[in-house]
Image (cartoon, rainbow, N blue to C red; front, side, top):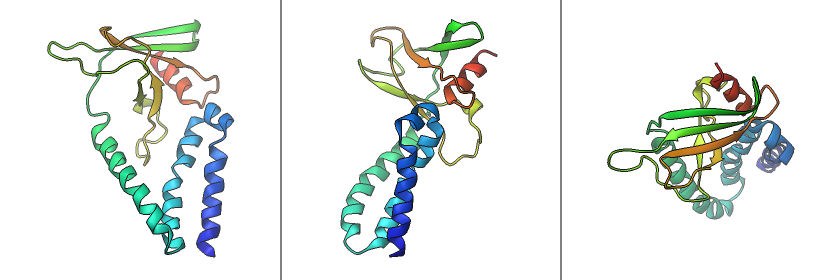
Length: 172
């Protein structure tokens, strides 16, 4: 039927953006096409009677988690203490960001080895009113007992890459 065809088209869009080369070279394309799963689930609800029994138990926990992230994430300001550029002058290969992670009473962020965080740089986002803000995951490089939280970011060479835009912005 019609919803089945729309499901197929939506899946093709999701798969086309999920390729490793697309993900590595143009993360934004991966990010936006990956979120077409929302359309896919909505279409699945209308596709037939049976699918709601599979769809709703998957969507409810996801929706709760997503709403928690939207209203909780990014609310605590974090002081950027230092920026290091590694590589050629003017064209770094790697950026190291150090955030101050000390307080008089408790650390602002408690983490362990292997944890990651999401970073966002509104100054380099293409559209301030975009429905999905550009949060990018990075592994925390510092030890939990250090007074700074350190993140290393490999700068992608393409000018449209988010990491390249961030590097240029931080070099100003």
